[in-house]
Length: 125
Image (cartoon, rainbow, N blue to C red; front, top):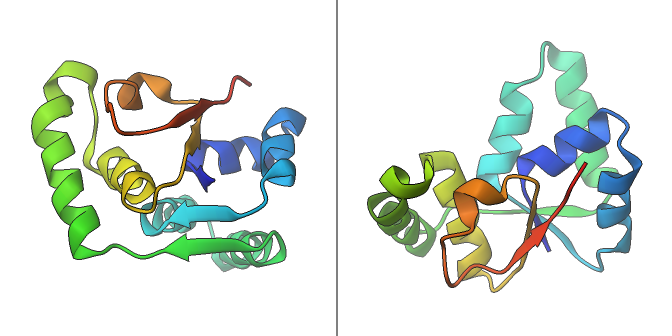
């Protein structure tokens, strides 16, 4: 499963339900976009280390931004930005899931639900 940034933020806040989604996943993936968002929200180097250690300890694999993902994300922005508020970062996450044939676990289904080829697993905190 590909985990959206919001799931990992919920875990950092101590949400047990979000943590259970990660616990049951056989394989844990994040987009490079999620990785950057997590580090960008850190207040200092200590939080950077904490985020990186968490991802390593939980065996998350960070999937790179490929040409195919970039192209698909661009199409998603063209098709869905006005209708659903899809932003560039979310488009990259969605495209990463689709290009790697992975379901996306997110609490932010509003931005993603119109993307037909995306398999969504919706988390409710």
